Length: 112
Length: 116
Image (cartoon, helix red, strand yellow):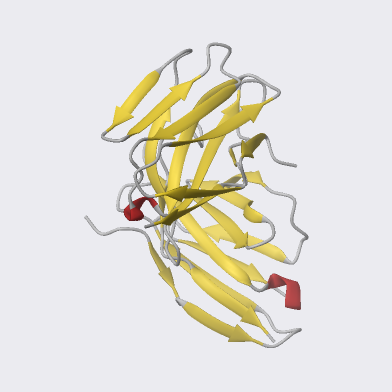
């Protein structure tokens, strides 16, 4: 099964609105990576978080790693049509090096 | 620097046949991993290679196999194809000697396999 659970599975957003997608794990994670896959495309790396409580920003995207390193979030502000795609988190649990796994992804649809 | 190259891009095969997919990683990358992506199952990990050695393997039947060559290029083979093997097969390469998943993965465009 999936190492991390991603919610929501689908996200319909009005252009200009904000939204957040989450990754949750029952075990402590060594790191968390986020990828974006545009329709018809391949996953593209966005960011990696390693430290407890780490927060990183990329323009309108804010990534956060939980204090317990068991969850992560991606928050997008002022959504644009270019944000359409599926966002995946991926991680390695601290007790299972070599078990790098992707979450199921959050598919984002933006309505103009 | 050239990205990850996967060939062929599209493939149609008949049930029972076998298929070989190729992946050329970014120059200097020694870790190559393979994934199967379907609408229902998402990104499913197949295997990961580093310096010609399979380091990790996902939960796929033995019909799925792979290998890595000394130049880091990798191939995956699927024998006795089934309809359910229809999917996008993605290859990714990673830099450095670190543990798989500790650095970013660069994905290829994928091979779209259709089994009829």
